[in-house]
Length: 95
Length: 174
Image (cartoon, rainbow over the protein chains, first blue to last red):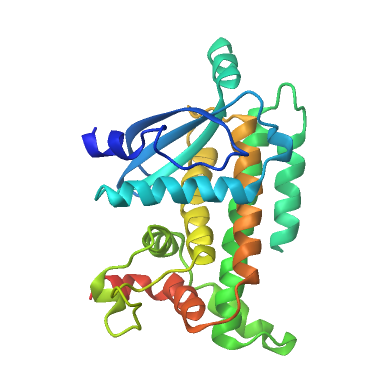
């Protein structure tokens, strides 16, 4: 993993919408279905987020912020951004 | 068509909220992807042919020329907010010399590229597990991405983006 990616996606420095509390980010190298090198960014949402009434504009703002921060560090890989709550990840592990 | 596909995606994603079935989440993602795909193809065809009812057969024929991979390549470039110099050679720039891509265009571009990857995984990757939060987030942000793009007044930049959805392969390789 390029150190610039970790620097770009430092949660303390990212300006995410306040309506979308984020607990942490997980980033890994990724290859998309066309074979292009890219990034997989998993956004772990706070348990308080009501996903049934999530604000789509806030999600788009968050995604653009991730794109912009990566670009500022000179990273041109496309970030595919996934969302989950920790409780959902734990439930998947139990299945 | 795209409104119906979004509605279908929501229905599928909201079935069994406590323990959603993977098959419903997968089909919800696919429906959301095709909502955005058909919306963009329709918009691009209207821009190319015209939006009159009598012109629908021509739009339908031109619509067959769009390919998922070319649209993805165009959208990943627009989503980043900057385009290759060879692509934008001769286009108007701002005071800093940049070709500005509006927020609404970036939003719909990143939505399309992101969704295409997830749709591929949903349809073909049997190892992938989907989470309800992820699917609802995808649908809601895709709806907003399309809505914000629809609100964007017609401009040369909007026409250019829509044209790039079918012309990108030739443009990007120059």
